[in-house]
Length: 263
Image 1 (cartoon, rainbow, N blue to C red):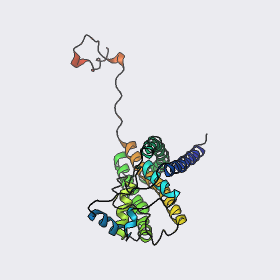
Image 2 (cartoon, one colour):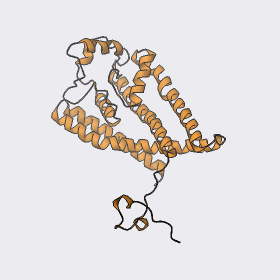
Image 3 (cartoon, rainbow, N blue to C red):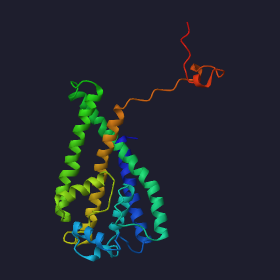
Image 4 (cartoon, helix red, strand yellow):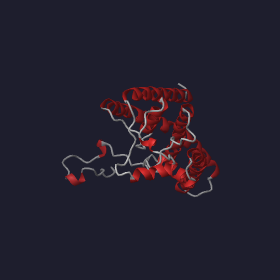
């Protein structure tokens, strides 16, 4: 099967899995229980940072099916902001099963995309950095350039858009994207609840879908960095064959030594 066709089918399967999972979670969970601080101080802090401006952020019913999709996206990407989580036993069980299959499938797709991008980068490295001495020197230059390009494309530029959409400062938007792409997911910022922008469910749904696509692209960049780093790491030396080992009557501390060369 053509590799691009296979990748396309994997994407179709992934999004189908996401949409079905969101529907099931929405049906199993009667309401949402976002994180809130009993003392009120931490809650107020998050409120001010997110710009929500009222207490309804922490006590609401699901506004749409796409909010369940948003939850599923944070599960399979392992970001897990923590602002929405399952409460009922059935929803918790479903989330565990959904994550058990969804996370490996998602990262398998990322590995395929990352490998294809890494192959292109390595071809460019051979062509443009041939004058850099040594494979480690060339790969170091390549990794630095890919890292800087990714920071510009997937953090700094999108932060300007997120800042405008969410009503955050540029610094908060940059922090939010870093926490998301690194999959740390602290949960101090999670996006999608700016009342001035998301007055309609349709707009929220489009925003959530675009964010999931962004996660795929940005995390593919991270996968590319890992693959480029792994490709230049020295391979572990192969273990000697059994026929090359000394006889079993040798002392235990010499069992792994190779026989001297035959005359």
